[in-house]
Length: 469
Image (cartoon, rainbow, N blue to C red; front, side):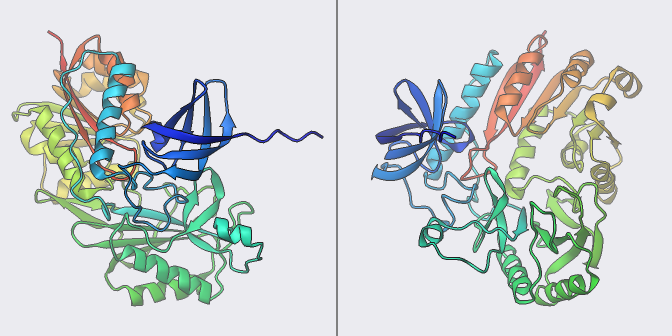
């Protein structure tokens, strides 16, 4: 049996730009090469890992010269962990590339007439800005290059941290994560040490066995903390011992929950969540409005920047108090409730039933009387009959998932013919595709990029579309 010929090493190659997914670009023999964890201006040797006709992928194995724009990584896990790939770029450069990403997508994919794109709104916080993180237990700890090269056998292969990109069963043990403020790191490390000291089994992702599966930590701007501990095995004695320890060590946890998830995947949307101590929710606050956040609720993970994002959406909508507003993909009704005081009525639609329950609660606790929420698949609910029953919207605000809007949803929007559409997107590429489909009846009037996720390639973008006369 013949072995595959090893891929070549490219020597002394200059990194020239930034591409999608946070990777950098080099050029070699009329072929684009994508490389992670480097920045434009770096001169490196590249070990190719994949080679196609028009492009290749590789990893850096040697630096000949560092870019003048490069800054020192602040995280000890940089280069292994899949997060915060851009931390070696000054923040001013990060948002410059994000601005360019939005422009390129809207021009190349959207192919619609555009106004001047407003300068991107950067995040005031560039570390410890997230309000939610999920960590995975694994008995297949990712070993460092030094550990592998040592040839030693390691008895302790347990980890509590993040999945290695592209390797579902390998988890990087995290000492300190710079994404979520305390007590996040302290809680995670205490749980890990407790489980190691008491010989609790960490999850085996391939064989689907073990006691400890995941933890999810949610914090809020109100100072509340939610911890969800996900077990695979149903062992009441060990579960009680761990949860009692956590409750005693971290009295600031206001919502201590647990789940027994024996499915093949980690999603908890279909799982029963049980309360060990405290409430089954925490609250966020925005302009005096309170928002209930449950364990399954979607809420923007950068709370402070979410406020800026929603203010932009509200400003673009230009409400006068007379409008019927449809808020598509409403989640827990955050945008719907946020704009309700300036609208005649707001109708929110969302796929997750629990989120709609929270949306109704959020209206109730804020004494908002002019909202109405529906749960179900957007393309099934938002149809011609729905429009005829509830009225044609004057304004549609839409904040879809990364995949963008279904063709049927776009067709219904075109039928409804609102005067304005405010399109909030976490993926400018799919947003641009949808703008092209809406172009027959709508022109793009305003574009405002917003950085919600410093040190990553992700960028939010808000677009105002106005009906053509």
